[in-house]
Image (tube, rainbow, N blue to C red; front, side, top):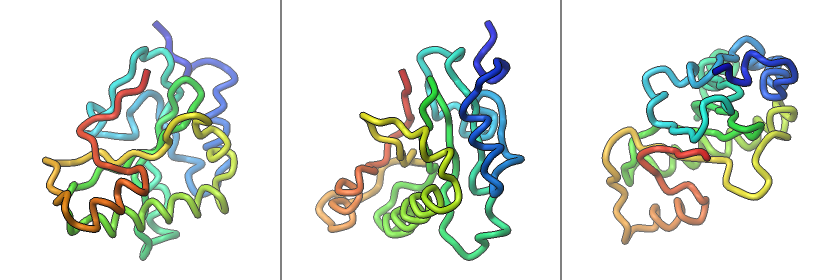
Length: 157
């Protein structure tokens, strides 16, 4: 079966090409996630519009920034994925990455930003190891308030 990456009218691919920072980063399927592609599970592979490695595309321009990892488009909606260790000491860093991503989307990637889901979360922290954020500490509450509690895998249906 052919997925949407090969069909005309792929809005995600067009949005990526229209975004200078990542214009050359588009990959079909989940290829941009590399070794982490198994961390995103989809209900129908034909609905994958493609993916990008945001960090790889912007690391020279934003060398000193806490940069977000990936974007995946599924069923014409874009989800943003950060694969990072889920430790109490890493909460601040991931929240900085989230703020960087939101600022980047608003200022430098408006076409990609338009494709975020309207009625569900768009930002996901996928834990690269076991969940080790101590639930009694303020960092855990910060993660919950940001809507970014780490998960082992992202399931898109």
